[in-house]
Every structure is written in C-alpha cells, then in structure tokens.
Length: 232
Ligand SMILES: NC(=O)c1ccc[n+]([C@@H]2O[C@H](COP(=O)([O-])OP(=O)(O)OC[C@H]3O[C@@H](n4cnc5c(N)ncnc54)[C@H](OP(=O)(O)O)[C@@H]3O)[C@@H](O)[C@H]2O)c1
Image (cartoon, rainbow, N blue to C red):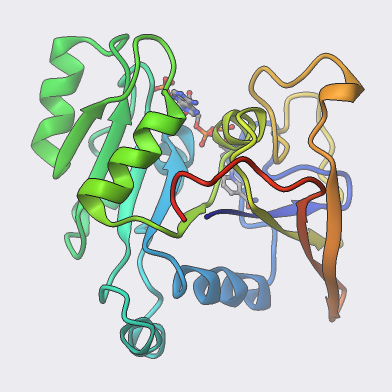
C-alpha cells in the first residue's frame, strides 16, 4: 500500500517559488504526518525534498515509537530516497542521523562517481531502471528484501507525479492550509511530466474530510480499484 501525504496552500502550492518555504501546515498538520509515519514500514522522499530541508524522516519521539512497536513495526521506519541522476546532496541533514537504514533508489543515469559517493552515506544504493525507476520491480524488491508493505511517500511533487502516473497511490492525505503563496514556479503536490488528457487523470473519491482550526484534512482514494498492489 502506498500513501502520499502532503500539505498545500489554498492556491495549491507545496512550497514557495524558490522552494525555500515548505512548512505550509500547522503543528497539528505535523502531528498528522507523525501519526502516519507511525503506521508505515518505510518513508520515501524525492532528492530535492531531502536536499532542501533539514529533515531526518524520524518517528517524532517515544510516543510514536511505542505505537510502532505495538503495531509490530520496527522501532524506526526505513528511509528511502529517490534520485534518478544521483544528484542527491550527500551532505544533506538526513545523513547525519543514523537511526534506521537509508536506501537510495537511482537509475543507470547516475555516474559511477555519484554512486560511489551515495554508497558512502547510504546503507544500500539500488539501480532501479535505465532512465526511469521501474516502480513495479522496485516495489517488489522493497517488499522482498526490506519487508516494506506500507510505504508513506512525503513528496515532493515530482516523485508524487511518478507514483500517480504509474497508478500506484492507494491513498492521498492532503492538508489544505489557509495561506496563499502564488508563483508560476512554486511546486504543487504533483509536478513532473504530468498527463496530457483529462481522460487519463487519476480520479479520486473523497473518503473523509475533517476541519481542525482553519485547516482541512482530506483523505482521497482512487475511484477504481488499483491493479494488485506490489506491496500489499
Ligand atoms: N508541503 C509539503 O507537504 C511538502 C512535502 C515535500 C516536499 N515539499 C517541497 O517540495 C519541493 C520539492 O519538490 P520537487 O518536486 O522539486 O522535488 P522532489 O520530488 O522532492 O525531488 C525531485 C528529484 O527526485 C528524483 N526523482 C523524483 N521522482 C523520480 C523518479 N520517478 N525517477 C527518478 N528520479 C526521481 C529526481 O532526482 P535527480 O534530479 O537526482 O534525478 C528529481 O529531480 C521542496 O521545496 C520541498 O520542500 C513540500
């Protein structure tokens, strides 16, 4: 099962146009993210989300770790980063926190030099395709080697787009925050190459909506049943 969790402004942006401002949501929204993490075997982010933010992809503390143990999950989730060209910054904050394995998914586009550098900071670097990640094969591998059944993707927009285009997202958790950022180049929850025709769009249904303060917490699911999940 793949869950995508994102917070966006009322005008649909997930960061400013310089990509520098990305804490869109409130502390309640952050708590929602930690609650979701406490249900996942692994957390996955795109290279730019890791480069641009001081994130650790950690549990958020003892309360969540106890929840994880009660759910028979590992104490800390596995951390997965996607970098097709290997451009991921190996000095990113994430690599300074050694509490769970870090897996880097890349492609043959990455140079030997880049892969060598990534190997120094990650527990495993996996070539998952020639030019693009082969998601079905990669998800199979993650399940078989790392026991990943429930994967939480925390963006950014380019990575989300790849998962939506491959029809692999089972649930989208979306927080709509009462802010307007604007900007042609500000990222949205789904950027990348996108789709050309409305007929190909992912059709979702609203499973739940909850208002807390001035934020809306939405859970959406695909309208049609997805092909057999590679992770479930
Ligand atoms: N508000 C929120 O909830 C939220 C959440 C997360 C992130 N953000 C913000 O979103 C922005 C980052 O989003 P983004 O769309 O620019 O970047 P992103 O999705 O985090 O990372 C993009 C990079 O990841 C790699 N990648 C992603 N999908 C891939 C695929 N299918 N195959 C191969 N490589 C793939 C590529 O790395 P290479 O270039 O190495 O090939 C690509 O350049 C930041 O400003 C971040 O702070 C906001």
